[in-house]
Length: 230
Ligand code: DGT
Image (tube, rainbow, N blue to C red; front, side, top):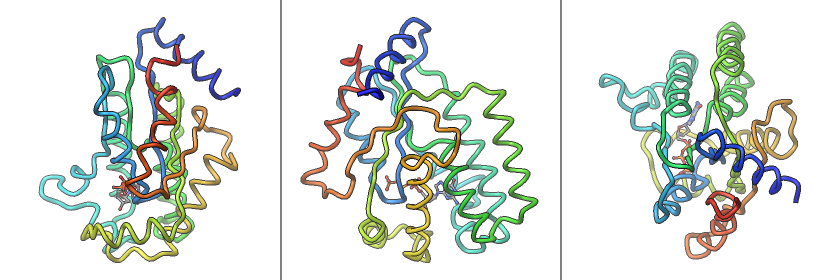
């Protein structure tokens, strides 16, 4: 298909430019992004960059994730500013391998989470405007490369149950409606393409499957992520 040919072309160009083939792993909260990255640990020549949640939970002793969920109107801006910084650092981190797999991106932070906070009113329009200007500056002035997006598509009620089961303390107050809205924002960005800017072709996987079946689903992405595509 067209997307696959585009990926192969990008991979060949990357080899010539010696920058890694960069894959962004996206999906709702609890869609299994970390498990997906872990699946690729068995392969050589891949750098796995998991999301810096632990940094968000402990910045000089402050749990910004908890502050954001406990009092979003007060802390959303601070949290989002730090998310942007840590994400940008991951995008720019040099890697010595030909493939780089990254959990989330500055794009999902902007198109899903910041958009959600704007709609909910937890970000004041002026705060949104500042984050928007930062995003535009980064997007035009700092190279943020992406060659493929893997979208772990899920049903909101299924990930909601997973979130309840894993019981991350900060997320206990997250209602199903929040997950449903976040799902729509991922769909708008990656499937309906409502933003002009989707940085790479999108491969959609069924991430509703349970752990006993998910490995087969993940395998469908191997040929596009590993160098078999060259
Ligand atoms: P996984 O492996 O798919 O279960 O991934 P999660 O759920 O551990 O990771 P993720 O990125 O979906 O979410 C981690 C937590 O951080 C979750 O409570 C949502 C929150 N989060 C992640 N990125 C952002 C962001 O840009 N803004 C806001 N407000 N929250 C974010």
